[in-house]
Image (cartoon, rainbow over all chains, first blue to last red; front, side, top):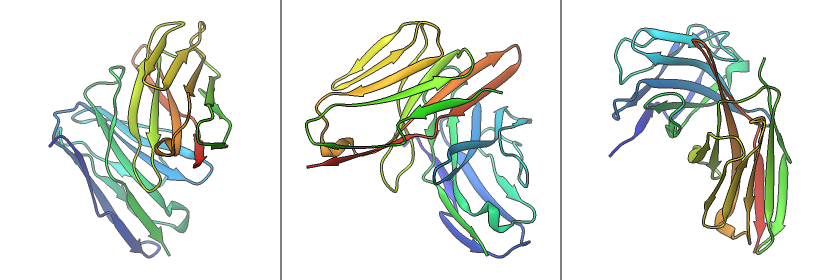
Length: 113
Length: 113
């Protein structure tokens, strides 16, 4: 089944404790992206990747890191999480930007205490 | 930078009434995409519009892309309870090697049976 998977789905952590949210797609997509969703603010792009080893900042990259060492995986790293990073995070992928249809993962709800 | 404004933020209708959400970009878009997110779910792709003045239909849903490629609308005829959710537009912009995808904040549609 074609899908985007994220882990964990739910995470409660404390300020400053490094964490990684994994994202994997099995559709051989070149483009992958991370978003955060907050009430009243919609979906805001954190980072995106056009292909392996190619990443770029979205609208809200501060406090986040990403890497794209292989095509299928695009982990989101929070080196020192803070409470303002409490949010719902979505990973998405598409075959190529401009060709439409981003497939979204199920989401990761992160709470930073 | 590119901004995508979406109105209204909320819309409550009686089942059977029509619904429209509007999207307006501050810059000319390469294309526009529409997504639906059910409560507790993840965004799901509905459609992509590419051409100036394009109109596409999916059963009771009609999508339009403005002549200037800066605005778009989604119209639902005779809403049903299954239409409940948040509808997002997302504007894509290509400029040389620069790529930008910006989501509107979404319109939350609730339907009273």
